[in-house]
Amino acid sequence: MADLVESNFRLLAVVSRMGMDSAFGEHSVDEICARHGIDTDTFLLLCSAYTTDGFKPSQRFIRNGRVSDILFYLNRSHDYYLHEALVYLKEQIDTLVAPCSEPQKKVFHRFFDDYNVELEKHFRFEEEMVIPYVKSLLSGNRDKRFSITQFEENHSNIDEKLSDLKNLIMKSMPQGCNGSQRLSLLTFIYTLQDDLARHTNIEDNILVPMVRLIENPRAVVGAEAAAARESEGRGEELSDREKEILVSVAQGLINKEIADRHNISINTVITHRKNITRKTGIKTVSGLTVYAILNNLVDINSIE
Image (tube, rainbow, N blue to C red; front, side):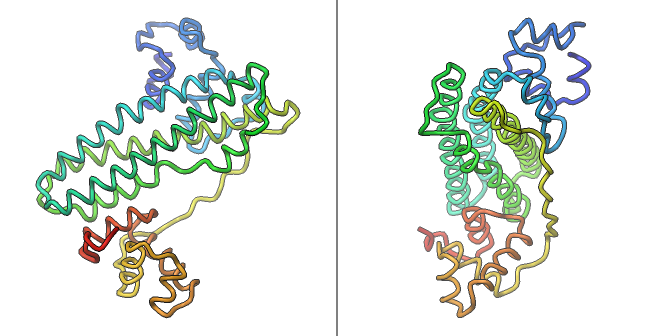
């Protein structure tokens, strides 16, 4: 076990969330898992998700895993994100923006509060709907009003706003902010974003196929072709037209309203928005709104 963790420090997160202590000694992975009542194959599945980007296990590994251990991991992960990671993130943001003006503080705090609410809603759905549904399946009582496909179709990305937050801190944070605090916060956000991405991968590519096999033991599940990753160049300046479109987005207008305001087609609006995202690295409306405010493109008082 010590050798396994030595190969990838990220596995400490898996060890912690599976309720294991770090007193490994010379014990094997099997021995440590047995001591804590964890299925070894399932533990190694989780480790693989933290070691290999976009990990998608084969059907054989999915069939050998233990769903209850995945649920245990997810529950402990939710506790960590909500009660440790977000608490620390808020404290660090508060410290970093202390020298900023009140409007600047306000916009950062609002951005964080919105993300906090989004994350709580995301995890509450999993805790109140998905996990109880899976537990009912394991006990032999299936609720036909729900299926794992519904979870899969509505499973949102929970780390996009962290990308926006990174870009805002790097590109739009006032110069008076402490440089070392900024680097420390960025390091934490990068680490948290990576952790959340792997957490999401575990839900999509391990939990969902496992549950699908319980729903239909004859189902074919497992590794699929990885989606092509979008390659985006960043760092270009926004054009005057793109700034106008960005202001409209920040003011809450939808694509048709933006098209009408600027007398352009909806397709042109979509093209401009793609370019804005490519150049700023910011994907969400809330993130673009903060960017517009911090770059003096729009007054915070004009945003509802």
